[in-house]
Image (cartoon, rainbow, N blue to C red):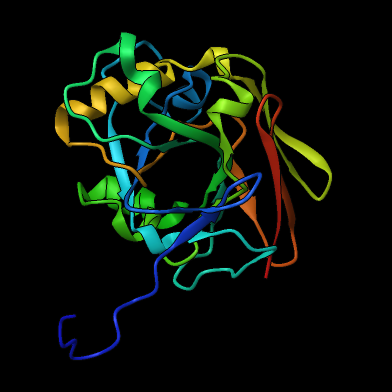
Length: 227
């Protein structure tokens, strides 16, 4: 054992339906992967090459409460399908991409939208807008061996019981296998990687006390409250 100068950080894990834990290695997020969301963000809604940003592994939170972060006056929700990678690979073909998937869950890509807008104007990175503490609210991971590989079905987000986002997985600009294939050209994917696959239109602000529920019809649901 190495002689650590201080105790190493604990491993971030997701609970797996049926038992076990999924250790999180890295988090990749696909930007503007639904044309209606690209349009509402002022971007070109046509099929463009996908782009990615990241969150640290310890941004994951699975609990019923998520703290309102500092340094923002505009915390936005973005409900998404999340993919858990279970096998390593690079330069993966679209046709074989599904065999690299361990399972699926739902997540909320929490975003400090005011910081993101400022970063965009200045041509700066989005890290502090996207990768802050508890910015990846994620539910229980369901193995693909149990639920299959959903490529259609509703995706919804509710705030205080009111539907704010509604779309269908079939509306993704880039499908899950295409996302995996494209991302694996840039980095070697490995077990424990999570991929947030994009959000439909309807993103908006959250306040302390708001109750959020993300539902993907073919996968699962996850609820949390902004603390």
